[in-house]
Amino acid sequence: MEDMGKLRVGVILGGMSSEREVSLNSGRNVHDNLDRETFEPIPIFMDGEGRLWILSWQLISQNTTTDITERLEKEARRISYEGLKEEIDFAFISLHGKYGEDGCLQGLLELLGIPYTGPGVLASALGMDKHLQQMILRAAGIGVPESSLIREEAWRNDREGVIQTLRDRFGFPIFTKPPREGSSIGVTLVRNEDSLVRGIEEALKWDRAVLVEEALDGLEFSSIILEEAGELHALELTEITPQSDYFTYDDKYMPGRCRKFTPPKNIAPEAVEAIKKEAVHAFRALGFRSYGRIDGFYLKDGRILITDPNSSSGMAPSSFFFEQAACAGMLPAMIIGRLIENALIIHREKNGPL
Image (tube, rainbow, N blue to C red; front, side):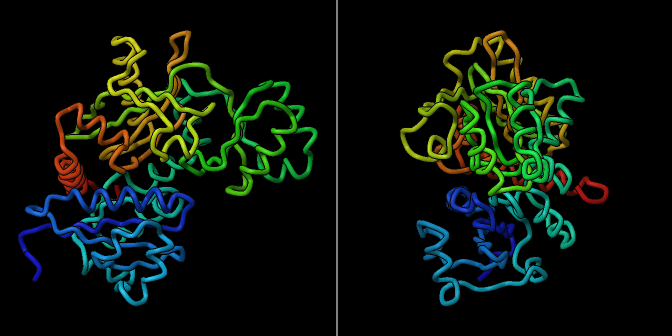
């Protein structure tokens, strides 16, 4: 029987993007760590076709989204988009990537009148588009990598011209990446013209354009930003030392593939404070709300470049989010509860869509 004193929190996980497995790990961990004294967790799975299902407890523990999908018809309950409001009071968005983190789901929740974690439609969309992010951040006086956007049409119509332009502007090494993917999916470290062709073709498997960026020489960092009572503050900074030449998908999610230092090991305290200040600046410039993760590089010449602002964050047990919260003395249940409470305040105070 439903406890009317508890907030029904729909933890939305899975999804239609290339990051569905990452989403499953995040959502499962959020679900497991919700304080049962205050919240009633309701796991809601979005399948590969965008349909929503309320999962049984047996399914939430399954290893992959494929495992779950194969059992949905018999062991889960299908719900409509319109029926979502009858099932939950609040949406904890644990989807990553396209259709979940890019404004699509946020727009649906706005129409249904369901408060949710993270920013609204526009800021969520910006949080997924690396090219537009850089334009906004650069205009706000925030350092970003040198880059160039190559449209698919330009590449198909004048491949040699594109190669010549990129070679003249950047040289090698450079990175190619789809502008609207996360978790380093579709990213290639390009060292010569042959790998440039392969890198562009790989990125075009995921989007209709390719973002070409300079390779950076410095220390990589990640900063979690929280919004509380209208104020923004950064948690403790994490320094990232991947095993590979760059922070690959495997480095991010495979055990033992990356060393993370929270607080940083090789960044001086005064530089750490400058990085946090710049991360908050980027969060505000992009219109993020509630919380977010701002990634970047601290270069050898002392410059701070923001490379990947995220309007949400992965929430697997070993994520930056929980490492940095632990440095502030917050257990997973505590920080998750604070995110929900802060988001409820933000939505109560909004005027129109968030």
